[in-house]
Image (cartoon, one colour):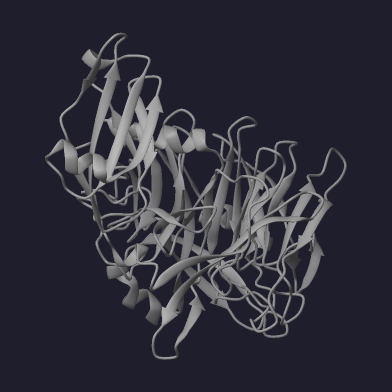
Length: 486
């Protein structure tokens, strides 16, 4: 019983030839005659592995392989499988509506976080996240950062746990959650998990640190003064009575494949070392939480970029030393902006392009109440310069009947030809590919059916991610052969 429609079929080594024929019939058959009458896939292969697609979920199929070894054909016995219908792929109630057919990347596939589904570029579901053993089974829990890893597995964060599975839904790795970095009972993983090229895993966590809030510094703005005490949930009431506030500060954590802690970095230490960074400008939203929402590890240049949404700030960190090399975004001191840049606001998902530019999804919510979100690409400052330089920008289109302000979510990924794949976030789940000359190459909207109002409604998405080529998908499929971690 399978939770996917694109399937890898494997011929035993004893039958390995250069001329195999895979046949699939819809239905459950044991006789040759019945099987032959209902064949829907007849596909030749030139090695022992063949990938084929069946048309629907909720169906039973029969298959066999014929092996041509020269003068004779040897047929395997008839085998059977079924594809499981799940509400997530029931297209009568959930769909991915294509608003612009693909001009490029026609063989790509898209993961949607909230749907927990992989779609082809025609909007057809081909895979969904199953009930994985050991995984949180709360269908209402938010899933973040569902994506393919560089070595062909799937990583994501669900119920504050960070996990890796294969295409078949086997658990391969799960992050330790001991609180060794946070000082609490768990690490509180959130927003992003990335598998590195060396097989390590890097992710965001949180720690609670007591912070004294000094009111009315100037014009009712606030200065955050660190107490410097890492605390657990149980110790909060006594400290709150003394005027301290528990502020969640981000941590970046790296584990190896055995779950050993390799490296960590704490945002609270950054604030403690630079009092000017505590200042809370009037437009800072979300209380006093900096709200770390993404990171990017530039493995080539050994730097980590950390995005703070509520402060419209990106911190560039030298790895593994942990030294802050640069701060991008507005910098405040004594109730005024003393430096920095205003090229983005409440941003998400900073990345480094193939040409070395810093790019991100600019939610653009500070400049006015209906700031149009943008994709912005910037050149980082060189010696003797403190400012980013904008080199490319794209205004994301929002349909007239939707709210223009998109404060939550959104992400962008550069594709091999320089085009940009983007998801516009929770208030507006449109996903698209735009070329560098600003031509839309593909776009889609995930939707669900509202039976009460008798209409389709947009499904909000925190992120979407792309498998940009058929070869990447095939690598993911054949990684089913990876041994699972019991």
